[in-house]
Every structure is written in structure tokens, then in C-alpha cells.
Length: 172
Length: 275
Image 1 (cartoon, one colour):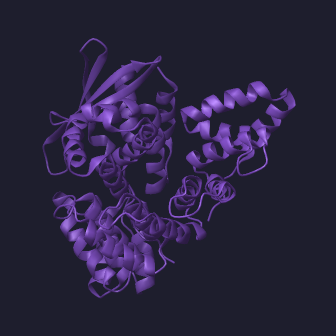
Image 2 (tube, helix red, strand yellow):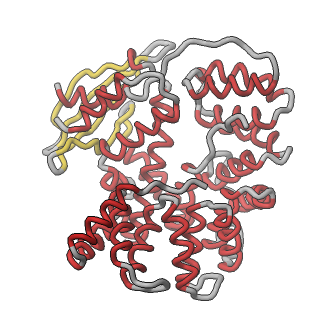
Image 3 (cartoon, one colour):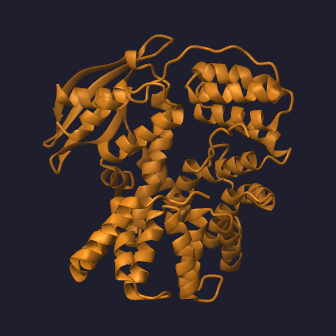
């Protein structure tokens, strides 16, 4: 298995970390664990062609930050003890779908699927499916509407806005 | 199985645990304890500590409560609630709290409180920018650059980028570097372009490092210095910028072994300058 597993395993034993430190680790794992350029492209669908080649790098970077900002707080709320991996099954010709359940404090489970592909010898997450809804396809619907209304510049600003919202203020 | 371990490990690393601490004696102490609780992932505790302060008019606590509602932290089953977040930010913003004004603006740009409203966003950004808040000055520069909520105006865009860049806001410095390169709102000035790319590069901004590397390699706006160019190209390439990878490869091929070694050592020793 990849070095990512070793890194995640080492991180498991780390204690006494602040929220910001854990999210920084998550950011690192995100970079390494997700095939972000692929997900970013899939999240635009046909609209990808409207993004100038010079803008694509910026878009992928903004998209990565957007995913971090969107998913880190959601994931960070859960107790690891309540997270269970159920199964891994082939999905399509190239992928595996790892099924997991996240038990909710108030009862019931949230089902999350992790679509994983071998990319250049490394396992990469190429999509998250929460309660049957694909992250990439869900984003595509929203992003397409924004591009139709305000163009690629509007999408970039939307991503900037959602990623640059400031977190809590520290004591002075 | 390995894939299962991969997913489980990925997830658990960001888990949250920890006991509650005692309550507060004074406002600053309470605020600080709320911050410590938030950092430890004890969001319910942070909420309980900050709520009375916010209700009593503490703008810092109002802002932070807004963040908690926006991020769905300490809010129980209700999760994220942008309307509640905006409510707290408005109360803080009315007291001139620039972070709150900035987040309100971003919420209007992001369309997360009642649809996208660029004009309202610009209104909040202008208030925060007048208060000297670099993040808002930078975002306002972007709004003028793209003509969102305002008539496109490169001069205004460059003016706001410069305000933020002068405070060391690295993305503003990078954008000001591009403005001088392209003559957007300022005269084309390659020397000034390099100056601002360097500010952003020294702050650790990868795209600026790539631009600076290219200019040092060409001797455009600065004296040619391929060894230093390689150092910046290596740093930018480490962030995955494909063009920087190509540039570093070409520079390595053109430089002596000693020069390559020195550039690599300089890249390893690089520490971003904090503002």
C-alpha cells in the first residue's frame, strides 16, 4: 500500500493537536489522497472546455481548497469510533468502491462511499458518494448554473468566496 | 484490507475528542477559553462560552458565533445555518468588525444567504477596506478586475491590490505583479512587476515563485540570475506547478553542477516570510 497509509497511521497516534493542526493534516492527505485535478475536471463536465488553459491551474487549486473547506468541518464532527468500513467492491473497470457507515450521535447511520482508483501506482480517491449522491456530480450541477450566469470568472469568485471565509478570531 | 485501512485512517486522523473545562471569570478570559475549546474541537463548550458574550455585545464573540453557525460546529442537529451566521456577522459588522463585514461579503458572493448579490458584497467589502482590512481590499481588487458588482475598472483594481500588498497580503502582491506585467490599471513596468512577484514569492506563494523564476531566467525586469531562478522554480515545482517543473528541468540542464547544488540547498533552506 502507499506511503499515504503509513502517514495516516502515524497521524492516528498523534494526540494533543489543535483543530487547525488536524485540518492541516487533512489538507496534506487531501492533496495526496485525492486525485484533485481529475475530480475538479469531472465537477465541471463539458464546461471544462470554457476554462482557459491558463486558468485551469487556478481553478484546480481553488477547487481543492473548496473541497477541504466544505468537507473538513463535516468530517471533523464525527467521532472516529462511530466510523465503520463495511466493504470494498469493484466499480466499473478501474475503480473500487469502499462502503462505509458513520453512526450519528442521535441514532442512525450516514452511508458514505469512497471511489478509489489506482493512479500511477497509488490509490487515489476520485469521488465521495454520500447517501447515494456523488460529490463530483453534485458540484457539476451547481457549477454549471454559475458558469451559465456569470461565466468562469463568476465560478472562480464563488470558489474564492467559499474558501476565503475567515474562521474564528483568536484572543488578542 | 488495505483500501479499508486507507479510508479509515484518512477519516480518523481528523477525529475530535476531549473533556470540558471550567467556565469563566471575565470577558477576555471567557473569550480565550472559548477559543481554546474551539481549537480542541470542543465546539459545544466554545458555543456556551461565547454566546453570553455575544448577546452582551462583544463583537469578537458575535463574529465567532457566526463562524460556528456557518461551519455547523457546536450547533447540534441543526448543522450549518448561514442565516444565523449572517445575523451574528451583521451585529458584529454594525460595530465595524472588519472580519464580520468580510465574511458577510463573501457569503453574498458565494450566494449562501439568499442568492448571489455582488452589489451588497461590494458594499460590505468597501466598509471593511476603509477599515484597513487587507483581505477585503484584495477581494475588492478582484471584484473591480472582473467587473462583479461594479463596473470593471483596472485602476481601482490595482489601487486596492496595492493597499493590501503594502500590508504584506501575498495574493494581492502577486496580482499587483500581474497588473504591472499586463498594464492593467498601471503602466507596464517589468521592474515593479518583479518587485511584487518577489514579495509574494518570499511569502511562499507558489505561482509568484514560478513567475519570479521565469523573469530571473530571462532577465526581464531584473538582472538575469539563472541560479536564483532555479531555486524559485524548485519551490514552485514542489507545489505541483507543471510549468515550474519544466523550467527547473531546463535550468538544471543549463547550469553547472555546483550552481544546481547551491540552488537546491537554497530551496531546502527556504522559509516563507511571514507578514
